[in-house]
Image (cartoon, rainbow, N blue to C red; front, top):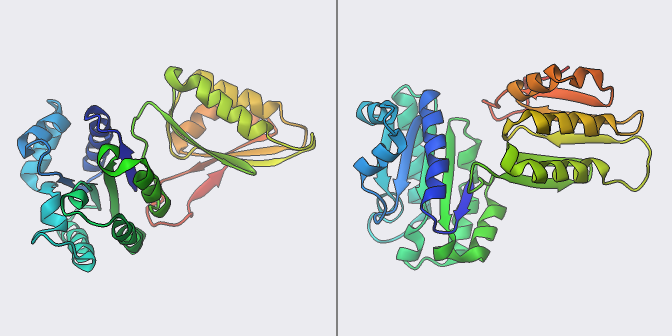
Length: 287
């Protein structure tokens, strides 16, 4: 995954905190690869822990590991692509041998400007690590600071990374498609207007008034308030007779929609899908 930021120190740590604490709770090992100028290790643990004791315990047990990006990427001052790929592959093997259910990584990519690495070479490296992401045990977030890399580089990285992560948790990421779209993030009061507008754009974007087959991917929507759920059901019910809107979502969101009356809307089909632990699309269930 790739994520970019504007240098605001608060936003990325909100994402990293949620990412780290969720991964630890799932029995996964977490490797934080930070810039040498970032917080000291003890400060990082304190920031992520927030008095819960969970992160401090994970560090003591070896479930949480902290390294600096210069150590992982340029240990001798030079960047070698295959050496870095091998280093991460070894970390995956180590996590598995230690008994963890997977490895989650966050890596600050600020090491590249430190060694004046050509941006084209960095993009080539990002594209070359794609095979690592086929391993269901491995997930990584690469952090690009726009103040260091510029908007152009952040956008280019987004094109070669398998996924992109939003900079803030209280935000929406909308991707349109001819037959629907994808909405990720949180549908809450602060994003309600944007969410409803995105729904209208996805469902009302048509050249004729006849029946349509639409797919709305909400699998990466981590929260939906009741008002937004009602709006989704209402808009689905307004589709022409014979239309079908398939909403792909997690089990919790699916149950909420059904409890609010999704079953009573003939144009609406709720497809509840569990996490894709093996990298495939199996285990799907539609009401």
